[in-house]
Image 1 (spheres, one colour):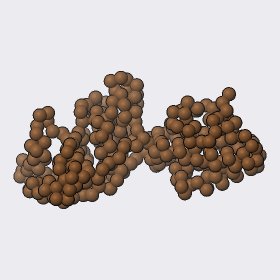
Image 2 (cartoon, one colour):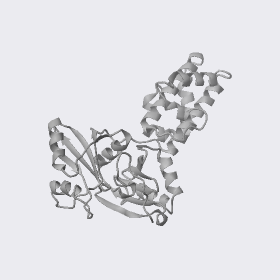
Image 3 (cartoon, rainbow, N blue to C red):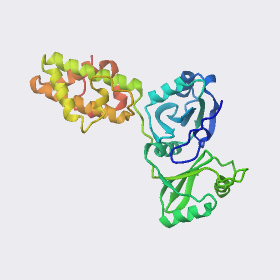
Image 4 (cartoon, helix red, strand yellow):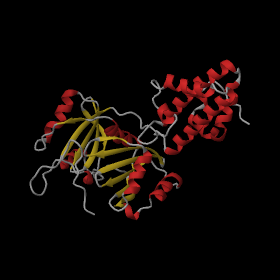
Length: 336
């Protein structure tokens, strides 16, 4: 398969050359045509050998997708393109993979959660690109030392991605493609070696600051479930207050949409496409809206809150309990 000529945004690094650190590979880079994607995802989720922290990397004609896994569960996804980087809905990432079975390549790698956090941060935020003299790399570390830089640095050389953490300008740790036993200094030096034709390597160096935890994205199945609960609460309110319940639901939605923008994903109409939202934030948005709506209903029908909450959430109570939804509403649901 001929590699894409697309370049990573802000660099001369070819997207098809990108490779990321890994503790090991459950699936080495191979043609997507030879991989049953659904079976691979199922293996990662259900098989003891597959339930690891790591990432699924996909090289498509004009982009690279990274799907992050926590103990085998898909939790988030990002894209790297010629136009830039960003977070992408997991469902959309899987759709793109399925659309390119003949021109894509896949790899399933294990990696520490900390590394996944750094990989996600490099795409979720805008990294600060630093200029590097590839013929005099020795100047790089003194500059960081003089700044007293604390945070993570992403260093890409000819597609090889390395993550280095600094404390007060001093190298502290990192995740790289260094061979076992190879000193870090020797590995870094190798990243700046001239190519066989004497040309300098394609280098991209960015500072990422201090990355936070890897967020869990709301998966399509969870979005569908929360949308169903939303719709059932609207119907329950309308049944309790004919002619008024739906209007109260719409009013509560409009009052909260500015502070809880993720409500747009749950409201009327299909707004799930193109939205990468946090599972925690989406659950909190539903809980805030449900509380506002049911309090309005209780002004007319005292004590209706736990009853209507139980009716609307009965079929999904276990999933809602696991997500912490019931802890964010002021009633314990009356369940049959």
